[in-house]
Length: 316
Image (cartoon, rainbow, N blue to C red; front, side, top):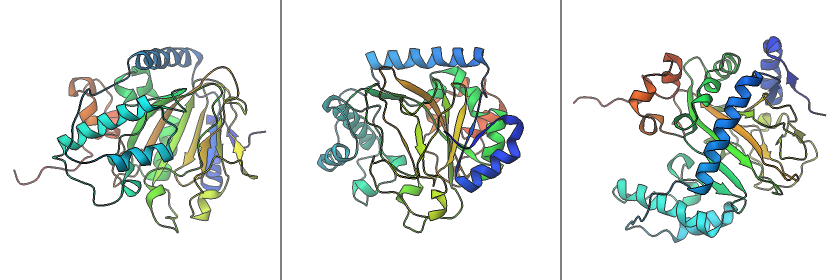
């Protein structure tokens, strides 16, 4: 049985539980009509990008990518086609950045600077990057009142949106590895006591033990350690089972992973990722979303994606 289940009416208790245990689940936060509309939009983007995945086309760079190829093969279950597509994105970005090399090995590069797979589990699972620019229904989730209250209680009133994406964990897939989130995963131990970022997963489908519901280790954020990169079952793990329309929230330093999907259907979610105002966001929304589109957003959402909240050009 999943512990840590609350309703929005019990917000103070939910917040206390999150801070103590490192995670919480708020049930039935989305109205059925909102859930249906969101599910339809995300499904349409998943299908479109499955049939015609984003691709920068031919790209060249003066820098070698053998180390990148080896890194992704070791750490991500990607198909040869996905690996090559991802390397094309990296080559294009490197060229745009004047082929400036990283001063550290690829395994130590800040993940914010690195393109990551859209397809994984050998193309059976899928991710949508830049969801706010592709599915307008997702915008309401980012500034949903109850979740934003929790975010600001944990990360400060001036916290930002670091990323917003959607995932579809494919049928008959083995699940992910235990990890903590960027940037905590790249910090030395002992990890900071205070959370730097916070993640949530809006459930578009029921989350169950069988279909890949997120696993967490309660209280692991207090250990100030990182988990081993492994998908092995842990004795004290908790499976975050809840009905579609609910949202799971966890601290960035809580050990977590996606579970194995043993069913014949995908398990889908929208992920909202928030950070303290002085942490570099994972996604550059201001480059990804046209200003004319952002102008239609609320002031709250514009701030969250970086308007009046990015470094300035000074002296010119």
